[in-house]
Amino acid sequence: MITTFQVGNNEKHRVEVVQPFIGRKMIVKVDDTVVAEHVSPPQSFVVRFSCGKEEVHQIELSINYVTFKYEAYLDGKIIVGCLFPQAAAYNALGIAIMALVLSLWSFFLR
View 1: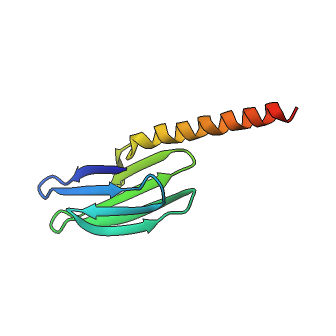
View 2: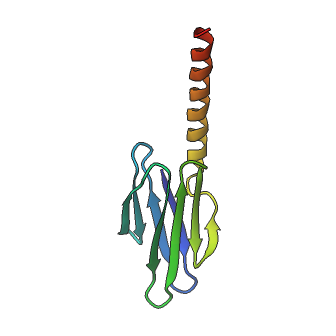
View 3: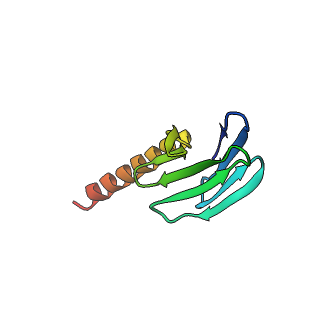
């Protein structure tokens, strides 16, 4: 899964967040330069970095796998409410499959 967004008014930067569908190694690039590589724990984590030379911005990526929240903050204000919208569908499919397996398992245990 890849998400990109732009940061800055006068000094524009392209931020790219790469999160593989399988695995937890997230890579963050600013203008095609890797600024953070993070192997995430299974629950939640926050990645903080800054970008810009004359117009410096603080960026914070907040990832919570339990509540399916993937947010990006610029200078303390939310700019992207869902970094990976496709992840919600994948997670919903996983929950539906688990519910089906549990219901079948409870049916056959009677």
